[in-house]
Length: 371
Length: 261
Image 1 (cartoon, rainbow over the protein chains, first blue to last red):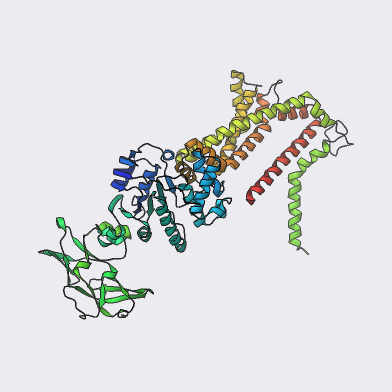
Image 2: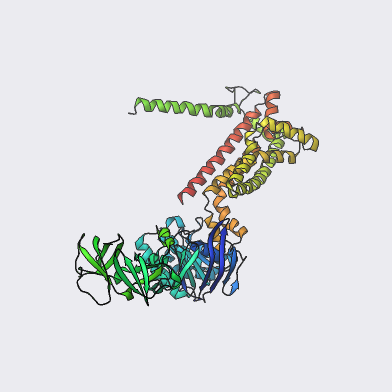
């Protein structure tokens, strides 16, 4: 038995889309293009508009303004049951009065598929999620992970060109979540269907996605691959939401092609300058920063800030340090095993090259949203 | 050896059980009375009152009248009450609450008040003593019971299942037929049963809108007992007692089987 046939995924084209509930704007003028067969994750904190976007694509809510095309056709006004899109919900939403087999057969029955053909397709779909032995069970006899696999089979059994998933692993424990992430990735690879996945978990987004759209306050802050978002975030919000980071603030001066920031009485030099005279902040990634004894191992051109170790955490695969800098900022530093050991209250320098820091315009909303 | 307080509790429970059941159970021996009197304890033994119930047209027609009216009421009230329950539970909270209070009034208003009003209107519209008249009046009385029963099952129904069904390709009617209705069916069925019983044993309104040509069973029982203390009443009572007991036992057995899966 093979998985359901490879089908061409559908492209999604969202232009200038907004969604308002009375005076509240859930989605503010977003543009989003999803390629056929792509695994796109909508990532953001709760209330950022990612689920609203998914509901618009699924047809569960109407768009207030803007356009939405699926597979090159406008779907404005088309009810959800005519869109031919698979949807997987966080709460599984299996029909409790039907067996697993009946649940998976449901969308086929609605499409007039009967008899042996239907049985064969149900079996293929259940094989794909490794649930074929459970066809005669009722949903309440299954664990959460099993129910979600059945829900996935039900959403894919009719070969939709597009599958939407709304935090499908949110209710499951970490081990199961990680295993199902790989299952979902495998199924996506096998089918070629376009997947749109909503999550607030940035690690999950990085594991699964071809590209990630980061939502904040009803807008899309940035769309890109995980690497693009991590290495060159467009906004402070994206930089802080994806991965760990340290934000340095201070008074900045432009000198030639460099930005010089004074933070806690010490200078940090960054290459380049921000356009438009925005107030700059400096974002540091923990693994791009080295921990050194004060004044030791100087590399030419590197920035050094002195602080004291506030926390030292042994992680098995390495160590993590929190360093309190002169102005009270906590800098996070990750070091491999075998690096010099430091203890709490030791005075140290954090050292980083200008090419390893990220210069971004300050954005107060990035702090508010994350706390 | 059970303690004294356990024995006392047992005796008390027995007393309450006797208090609840005795009026019903007294009817059974009375229905086999040998004499033509509604007396307890009965004298002698005979099946004659059962024979009378099945052969006397007064009893058979009133029984079939009640059955017909109650069956129609069960269907009509269940349909209207179920739709009302949907409206109430899916309207905005305030509107829903108001509508619900309005729909429940027939249950709260004293029966005599309703009966007088209905009688006055029926005199003008020539509905006294008609099946239509009975069905209309009893449907009104039965709707609150259906509403309450169906609303209770709608409250525990997960509406997100409707969204899921819709995403799988089901239109609104199909969603209702294949997902919503099967899941609220226990509520709908118990609503229908309540509606049937409400109509079948309704006496107050029936006494007002009855006519010599159309009597329901409760009216026939009432006139027969006030006019000539006919022991057939006891036979009818016994038959109804057995019928309702069977329905309840069947319901319990069904519930147990459902609970097991």
